Length: 106
Image 1 (tube, rainbow, N blue to C red):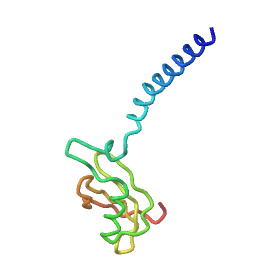
Image 2: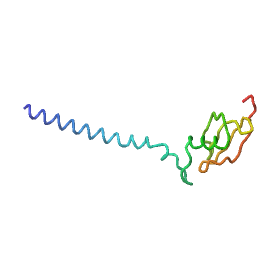
Image 3: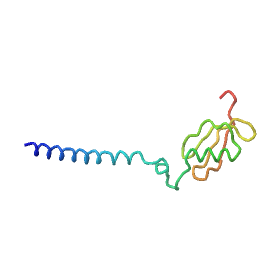
Image 4: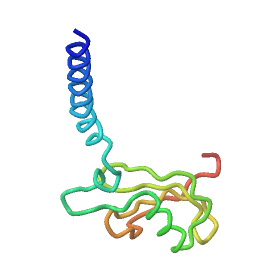
């Protein structure tokens, strides 16, 4: 009787481990690296760190916000002339494609 109990316990433990593995694999797929998730039809777009680095290289400082909006990145930063700006950034190249000066009250 004891051998049967041990056998059923071992089988139950094995089945539990297999079931846990079956549940964990799809959960890990949902948590794919951000670089894989951030792809569009035109190819891989830059991640936020890369956009930040591109803005710094272009002379922008006090970069306080970078967000994805309407197919491009938008950032709030101080331009090289010292003016607070809302900057539009190409998602693939990191090139600045437009900007708007912000009122100091904003």
